[in-house]
Image (cartoon, rainbow, N blue to C red; front, side, top):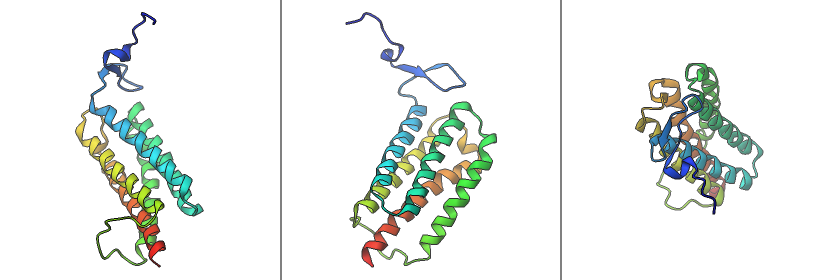
Length: 172
């Protein structure tokens, strides 16, 4: 075995692309990146099982948006990202409104009726956890901006509405 010790073996890693300061791997900033990464993985599972090309396109846009948010955090370009975040929000509002026009949910769903709905709800729950991380670390400035707060909130809403869409397809 090599005697070389990697810096990560000591429980620290680089904090961001802009700030090369080493941080504890237990720092909340890494929960932010880890939860976002987990969300991308689950959304990619959804993309693989969903047959509806419109929903696939929406999910691909969500993954793109998460990578964009990662870049905003890593490069600390919060102000410059506001316009693009606004476009994501507008698209998601249209999706939410379109799905919400159909039959509304009248009872609590205990068991999702199909894989699509279950996986999308799983993605929604991860997005809620990801949203909470922006408030737990002082290294992120998302919570200072109304647009970013809305982005994180609407992300879980659009995933929930998509899961309802598949639930409604099953119950028709």
